[in-house]
Image (cartoon, rainbow, N blue to C red):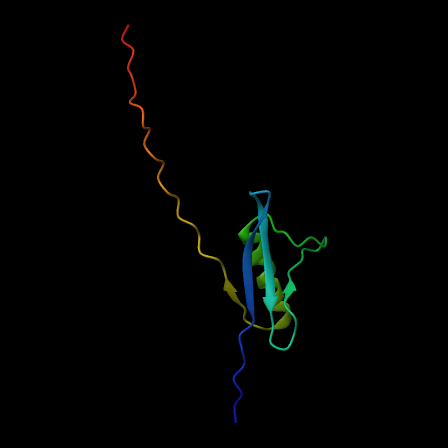
Length: 93
């Protein structure tokens, strides 16, 4: 009887400090183990770009021999700026 194995996942979050984006954090979820943050070689857990985080995930997948599913939050859509309530005046010289 074949057992169904759960695919390991990496959850990506944007790290912010006082409302300002700093970088990205990745959390690995393996069945039977606690969730663990990905860390760089220097020990920091914040990556400056998503591609740096993805490279770390690929390296982990290569070392463990597992295929990871990456779960990234949906990107927010930008809203258009509101029009000014006061009409612009033109100055003719």
